Length: 292
Length: 153
Image 1: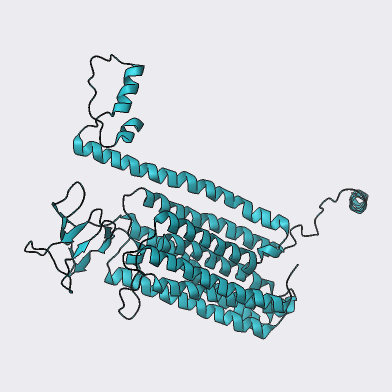
Image 2: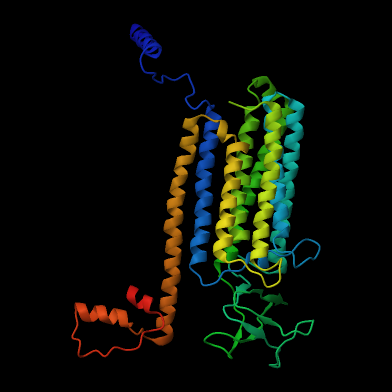
């Protein structure tokens, strides 16, 4: 047996030197460590998970006649501002981009074996992650507590015709500036809930087949709330886990664990890949939930 | 393989500005397209949507290639991590198409429920006559409101 193995090793060696190069272990064909490679494959599988959710969102959205307009649904800003379409979520996107930038800096400092630099930039990345989570907490609180959206009830409906709102006595409602309180087809509205009761406003249709008839606001597509909370929640959970991993790894950096390994702080590089992936997913969540 | 520290830093801050500016452009397209910037001015969806999707895909490409360092990795690693993503394209086409079919089916069921029946269109009557039909018994009726739907079902 011993000689056999020995011979094999010799033959292998000979092949490597002259003939076609065969892989015999001991080298890294992808020039990446096992851990880094597996992080990449985990991210590929995670990309499939998120794609599954986002494609489900798309299919359900395609299957209904109307969908709430994001620039109406997401138009609040902390401090009682109401007509700020997409501004808050743009701020959230900037926070995530910034935290990605600080993460790249941490990885670069790691490559240079600069322990202080790694700790500093990882700390800033953690702060960015916490800021993003706080923003999301505010956004969810606003949707749940103020606008009463749940995973089964969606108070954001969309008009399919032009019309004008009516007062309880049947006269046409006026806006504060005296103009008639009218709307165009495609406008999204929010049904308000007061003292546990939904207040669905009544309006007169002024266009299309049913012109002149009286109608009442209806709830929007039921899946909207469930999809929103589940997909942004799943992304938020990724951010949260990322913050926890970053904290653990930052503490390890501080303790000098990776310094001893002398591999350019590879663990920081791996968590960096994960963190950028979270930013990458947000690019698409931002696109389908807030832009389209 | 890799960049020098100074080049690295430059790429990072260039990337930060690039991603921020692209995000601003996307939000601007969404706002001006939905009539928030100029009163009464809207962009058609077929201009807005492709523009926003292309910009987002570019952002994704930049994050993967520069921030995640994919551009500087071994070719085998790049291929093994990126080619499976093609399956997502297939899933998107299949499921979004199916979502559209649910929509049409619901509209069809609603139409049948509201009228109790669907009138055949001129076109489908003609096919019927050509394939099966005793032409004298059936008098062509006016085309229904949605002739394409009767063709499908």
